[in-house]
Image (cartoon, rainbow, N blue to C red):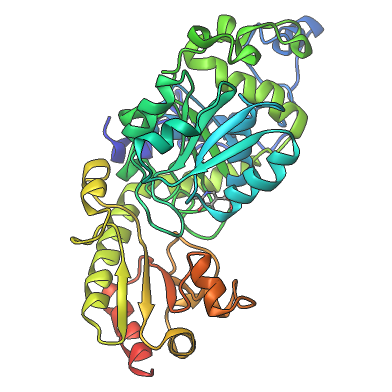
Length: 424
Ligand SMILES: *Cc1c(COP(=O)(O)O)cnc(C)c1O
């Protein structure tokens, strides 16, 4: 099946007389006839359900659909994208370990790594995603356990060189984890370029309608944990907290990582996605392919319009010919990139504020990547306490406006931008 078909058909196949739509199994618990039946589930000797903190049929159907879309062997939903990022690393790295991460990842992920996970004893080295081979090589340590990057960085819109980072990670015997939120599997499938684990904030395009916060982790099944057994004892030696199971032996290369992540991290940390939210996420997934196409078409038209507007000083959109990442985007995302654009308003901070005030259709929100066009001027909202000099040092220009292009008619959006820009 191709991606458009998988959006509709994968993950759940009703049997004779069963509901066509993924059923919402809104139940915390599941009933068994004998204690032995349930015991087998607890020992992971049989597959099935006993408690929805660990697994639930509705969330599993949706996770299986996303695994199919990414071309992976196993997947699990999480309560948020943050939980997915955290679990994806913490599943294979603990106190005393080290991780190499791209420096331009989403701010929330950066804080999670740089502040919270550092307090747990994990060290991170952040590298410029366009650094030299020598710099990248120098970032690795004997205790490095993973490399982490973002397909299209939010909000910098830098395209990550997945193939290059995968080669570097594998040369050091560790997996590459890629946050594929902005591109979605419709536009990029990181596993085809060597990534081993993919994460998403499903809150963004996958849900696509501002309805549910969620995340997902997908395993490619390609990383050979046993070949690097000394680095990953959690997967290759018995788990005493789970009846002495060795995940890599019992669940194989395609199942070990996700099974461990559910059995240990979901058990102990509990950031589950509810069946109701998973049901709504699935509604978003069914139209993901058609929506992504429209998001990209609209964003391209608007980026081209902005480039020609005299009140706009610069436009950053990786789909735009002439963009620094255009060639790399064409390689990894030949069908399109995403719907997010950033641009500069001539006249700096105050001109940008005037522009924002006059928008009628585009709403002011910190959110991105959904059906409604939304816009953010960091210098007058999220970053308003900083001076112009501090903003520049932090990589956020005072005139920078981030525009997440939705699914409205592009001409309506252009008319809105036109009158707001004319007001400056
Ligand atoms: C929003 C976002 C996250 C965090 O996801 P939440 O669902 O908000 O927890 C992680 N990565 C990227 C790229 C994001 O845009």
